[in-house]
Image 1 (cartoon, rainbow, N blue to C red):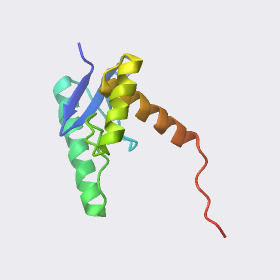
Image 2 (tube, helix red, strand yellow; image 1 turned 60 degrees about the vertical axis):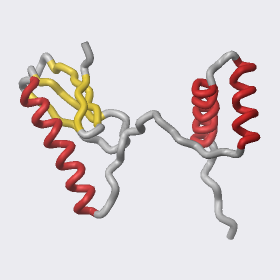
Image 3 (cartoon, rainbow, N blue to C red; image 1 turned 30 degrees about the vertical axis):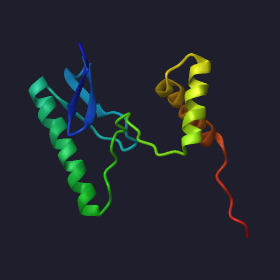
Image 4 (cartoon, rainbow, N blue to C red; image 1 turned 180 degrees about the horizontal axis):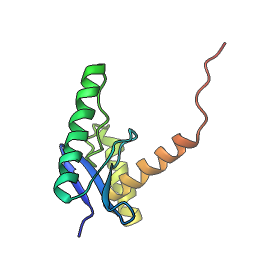
Length: 122
């Protein structure tokens, strides 16, 4: 059983709070915090949909783009020689190109997060 629900590309967790006897939800995979609850599955679903619709309307009203969860699909255009080298590196590591590229991107993203922000020259 999956303890999540999806609406307009957003996925929410579903956790039962036994003390308050409600289902508590939070939208996953975005930095913005969107939370809600319901006393039944149907109320939870209605409140989830309302929370997403309100979030999208607020972003539009503010003139900003709402944060969207990543799809997991990336299209890249790279030089043929880099593509060929990546295929060889993936094969040498015993991985598919997708798995190898996922690891390389993850490593680069983690390194970028730990690097101090670039300073402008005075």
